[in-house]
Image 1: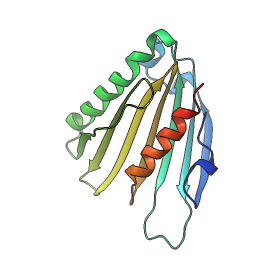
Image 2: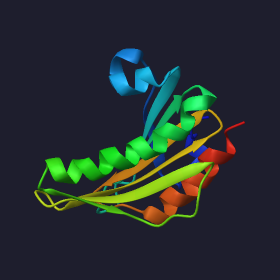
Image 3: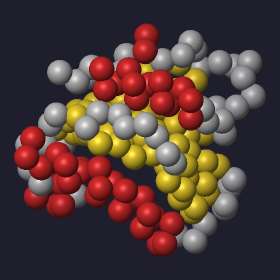
Image 4: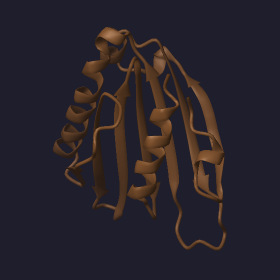
Length: 154
């Protein structure tokens, strides 16, 4: 279900791909029955570009009866982030529903003037997060990648 390099725009390379372990998960996630997960990072590999961009793809599998809890939890975590760190501004964005439920955010860090976008969604028993960050970000491409990723869930 992970995005492949061929799913991304030109000039991106796979930097890291790994299975996630229970030791990396929050107790809350384990309590909801987290089963397994995967993680991948893709980076713009274009020396002529004046800016950098990274895409991250996170996958988690939960019991189907608990999957409806995961996106609301992500929403809460994102809103709490800005309350805990005054340099962070978190703005929820409107997004057509992807999968069974979804949410989307723009995050800005005033300490270094960076920003990132996140799209999180659940479908069937799968939860996914897609992030883009770096000195350049592209929300439209992230939405396209989310549509590609949700189509991989069977």
